[in-house]
Image 1 (spheres, rainbow, N blue to C red):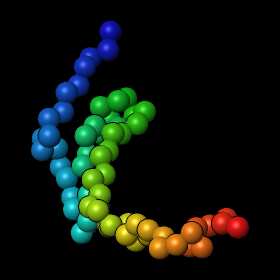
Image 2 (tube, rainbow, N blue to C red):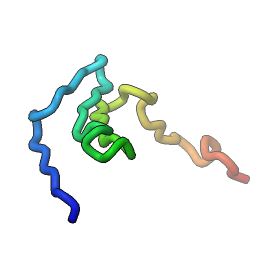
Image 3 (cartoon, rainbow, N blue to C red):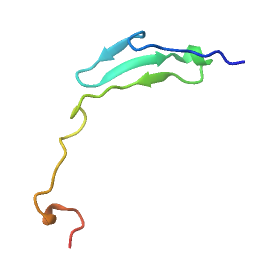
Length: 64
């Protein structure tokens, strides 16, 4: 029988790298070395430029 594991918010170690976070939820040893569970909270615009809204149809890719 498999044992259930419940992890509450803020219970485990987390690190913030200036907009990109790492929150460890389940370590590999808790899954028999099969996999870890990690949550990566990402601040808006941390990894990409802001959305581009075309001003005219000629800005659209593939327009004729």
